[in-house]
Image 1 (cartoon, helix red, strand yellow):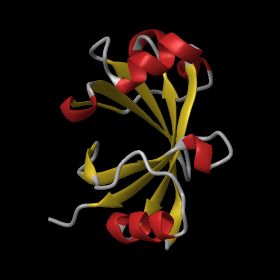
Image 2 (cartoon, one colour; image 1 turned 180 degrees about the horizontal axis):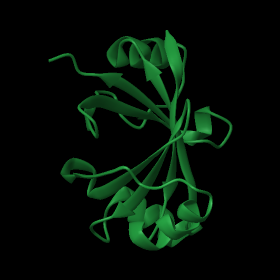
Image 3 (spheres, rainbow, N blue to C red; image 1 turned 30 degrees about the vertical axis):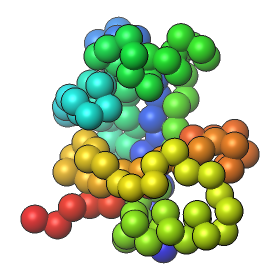
Length: 134
C-alpha cells in the first residue's frame, strides 16, 4: 500500500552548485547526509508535501555517477513511501515487474529502500521507501 509520493530525486554533479537555483526559488537545502552504501551525498529540500532530493555521487562507480555520465544531470527517480517495502517487492515481483533490488537496503533518513527497474515503470526509476521504526 502506497502512503504518498515522498520525494523526487535529481542527480547533480555538485550539491552546492545545484543549490544556487533552488535558493533563487526561495528554498534551500535543509539537511545533507552521506549514504555510503549508495556512494552518494544527499541534500534535502522540503516543500509543503514532497521533498526534492539532490543526489551527488561520491565515487565514479556509484549508480548516480553512472547515470550522470550516461544521461547528464536531471531527474533520477520518484520515491513512493510505502508501509512495507518487502511486501511491495514481493507483490511487484509476483506480478512480473522487473526489480533492481530484490531485498531492501539502507537509505537516507533511517529508511529501507528498494528500486523498481525503469523498464517496468514507463521509463521512470521508482524508489520504494519505508521508515524504520526504532
